[in-house]
Every structure is written in C-alpha cells, then in structure tokens.
Image (cartoon, rainbow, N blue to C red; front, side):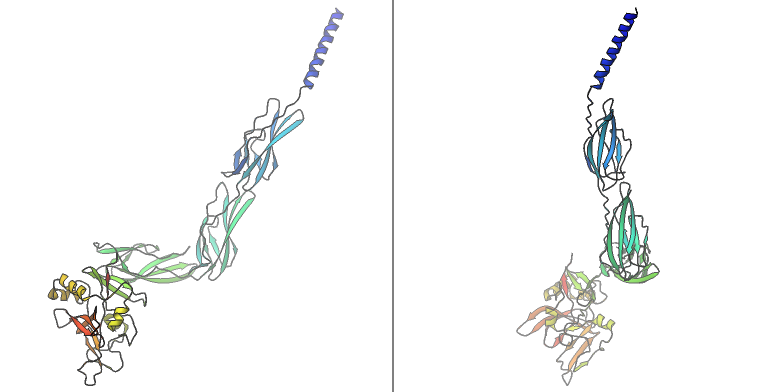
Length: 479
C-alpha cells in the first residue's frame, strides 16, 4: 500500500516536471503593428485617432513618444487611442508589445501643419490722408488664439487687439510695424506689416455735377461717396442747395435726395482721436440739363438734348490764345465798346463767355465736341416748328434749355468808328454764333444770330478775318 502511494506520487511529480519543462521552452512571438502614418493633420485640438493592431492575449500594448514635444495619449494602452499634438511638430510614435520581460515596438510618423497667420488687409506704404487703419487677418482656427501688437512706432493704440478684425489708430507722420500672432500650446507664428501714417484729411468723394437719375421722379437720389477712417465718426451737412436731404448724416455712404438742375454743396466732417477734418463735395442731378466739365481748365458747362444732338447751354469760355484767338468783351488794344461794358468779374465772364476767331473755334474744340453745321442748326429750327416758334424756345428761358444769350461780338473793321478802331458791339442786344460751314475762297464762315429785337433767328456768312463771335459746341448723344 505504501509502495503504491509513493509510486503514484512520483509519477505525478514527473508529469508536473515534464509539463513545466515544456512551457518554458515555448517561444515568445512579438509582432507589433502601429498602423499608418498620419501626416500634415490640421483639425480642432490637433488630434489624431491611432490605429494600431491590438496586443494578442497575454501581451501588453503601450504607446510611447519617441520623437516630438508636448504630445500626449488619451490612453497609452489603447491601440485606437487619440493622440494630441501641437501645430508644426513632427512626432515618431511607437506601439510597443511586451511579454514576460521581452519588448518589441513598431513606429509611425505623425505631423501637424504649422500655424499660418494671414493678414488680409495690407496697407500701402503710406496711409494716404489718414492716421488709422482697419486691421483684418484670417480668424484663428482649430483652437489657436490671435493677438495684434505694435512692434515699433509711438503714440498708437489697437482697439480690440485680440480680434482678427481690429482698429489701429496712430499719430500723424509716424512709421509703424504691426504684428499678428497666432499661438497654440507652446507654438507661435506671426506676420508683420509696415506703413507710415499721413495726417488726417476728410474725403467727401469726387464732385459729380451730372448725376443721371430717374427722369420721372420729382426728387432724385444718389449714394454719397465719403470715406470714414477706421475708428472715426463722421457727419454730413448741406451748406448749399434747396430741398436736399441726407438720410443718414453719420454714414459715409448715406443716401442723398435732391432736386434736378439744383447745385448742392455738402460738407463731410470726420473726428478721430481728438482731430477733426472737413471736406466738401459738389453734386447736381441732371434734369433739363446735363453738365460737362472741361478737363483743360475745370470749367463746367450745361448741355441739353435737342433734335438728336447735345447742345452746350452756356457760351464757351476756354482761354484759347487770349488776345489772338479769343477775347473777353471789351478787352483788346486799340478797341472801343459801342454797347454794354467790358467784362471785369468772373461771373459775367462765365455768363457771356469768350468771343472766338472762327479758325481757333473750329480747330481747338474740346475732345468730343464740334461746331454745329448750318444744316444741323436749320434742322433744329424746323424740328421746333420753324423760325417763329423756334426763336423763343432756343433763347434764354426757352423750354429747349439751349438758353442762347446776347453776348455781342467783336468787329475788327466797323465803319461806324471814324478811326476804324476795333469795336465790341451788341452786348445784351445780339448773340452771334459760329457754325462749321466755311468758304475758303472768300474766307467766310456760316453763323446764326438771335437778337432781343427780332422774333426769329437768322443765319448767314461773315468774314472770319474781321469777326469774333460766341461759340456753342455740339456733340453726339452720349450713352
């Protein structure tokens, strides 16, 4: 009995020993798979989901950072864990398997796009007529923060420096460098702009004396074109013109309402950082008359459309070769004034215009304009009902708007003067106007005439050598 028990015990120990020897001899197989590389990632929080193959039963899996700073795993033992990094950083991550003291790892590369600050409002080298500027940059994304700062330059401030859209207000005639910085974690990136400030000068827009608006509406509308500097306040005020309205006086692009053929002058006042500046703008809506400005001297002229042409409604007044090719009434050497008086002030000179030599008037018309022909004048008279009906319509105050006046004329060989001096004749009595028709053999050119004493216009020919007359140019209708 004792023998059998001892034998069984020895057999059991042998089996255990054999079993133990077999387990120690089984090889350990470690085959980590870390997944695919994740490169140039850009998203909220700068995070990626890893994709390692889970550890086999009996083995332990662990994520580790081999290369790269400020990276972290949500769960180092989860093969599918989230990994958080920083922009611009490149990481080497290892998925490590271990069993009974043995280790083996596989790695992947993970990288995140760097911060990329972008300034969208780039000022010119000089802030023309201004000391302030609207700062605009692309808004921070993916959890980054933005900050404007003044790198160099005195006496300035940034209003709302932590907003991508901010306002810079500086001092006049100073050079500034501004910086827009993006930051996330330990990372920063910035862009800079440089400019020089000017002094503050209000801008009310360009003068517009021929605003084409609705023909049927009694009042006309125009969007004002003032400029409001960054951080400033503004105010419109009408200083000339009747029945005009600025609908929003503090808005630079307010709607303006006014009457046709009425000249308006508006002021635009801006206040910024204790400074104030004022600019004016002249406006006029086209009604019966349009308005044309001669670029050569800045003078303005009304025009009206009659019988398919645009006719100037003011006598031409450009100083073409003064004293040789054109004259003001009453002004020339060895001359007398038979009627009226010499033109001395600017208002009278503008009203009556200059008297021109035909060749100068013909050859030096402003671009796009020309002398009308005799046929064009006669066709206009016929279209208006003939001489008797046309006369009051084309004279000053007539319903066509041509407004012919009596500027007189200059005769270099008038027989009424015993000394045969040059004579200025007919002011406020007669208006003589050059036409384009010309007879070279006799040096005669065609003319038309309106007078205060006649109820019909006249036409004919005069020698260009002796007569200097008023001019009304015409042009094709401008679309």
